[in-house]
Length: 426
Image (cartoon, rainbow, N blue to C red):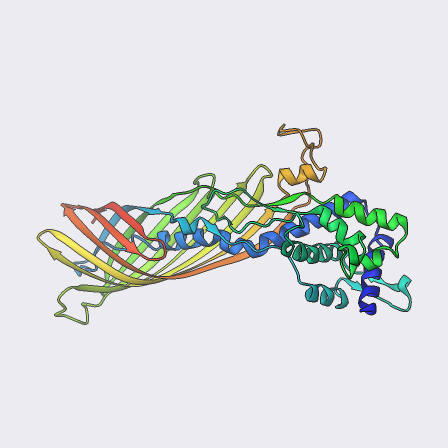
């Protein structure tokens, strides 16, 4: 225990002695780091509903018949629309707080990754990551505070996904933090931190308290876009046939879609092959299809103009069946679909945090206040989202000369209606 206390003494002493940035700078860097760690583990569940809906939507409207005519060249152009309704359980998730346990804290401090401590010659101690040390202490005290109902800490039990609409905050009990560091152990102080506080000079004590009291009162979680319905449309061409095979082509040039999606581009290519070519007397038309699709998204988000770039790869394979009866073509299919979204997110501290940290005026809603533009040190996050799903599709189509209209419904993680019209060019 004494060795651990010495380690913590040297860490806290080193923060002030060997790297003496302005305290506001330390507070800002700590806030940036904790905000990033709050974003990291929560970005997956926040974005997962979007990943699921994009997988379901992009893999819809591949077919409205399993038949592949062998009459020579044909080209069919179509425009399909997709509509799905966001479920309530897709609007919230359970967030994770940026905390570390006492064991993890001590292991982190003694590992040497943040600080290389020389017990025999403290002056030779090397601080590898000043901000990292402060963040480790804060995350350890967050862990303690969230277990203590009198600490003033509050972390939400739920938060909004990208489709939700909830204001949620991680409230930081700064009085509790101060007590843990400054109070004796028998008065509620932390067993590691309070023991070393009294060993420091008044100047060092003031410096440490300034860091703690300069932290923001709370950190915010993303609010969501308040979406109830997901709609999309895609043009496509079906070209056939060669050796019982049909080509599918989709393409959407880069366009500004909406404030949630931003600049969006989409393309897809697929091959559909007739099973009836080998099963001559099959009671229905049968075929199988493989499709690969891709998309890119670029968007500016929020008042701080954070930048989002996403590249998506989508694969789908299905087996289709159809049967014509009295002018109506009934069709269905079973498919397996997978999606992978790689995102690069460049973002800045939210304006409300910038106000708390002194980067922007507290009482100004002016888009260009005297301290504009505030935070100018972006943070970067790279996250990959994936989803796999199986889907059952049932639909009906009716032809009117060269035109065809269709409607189908798909049952999967995100149930979706598809409808549209096509035209036989050749």
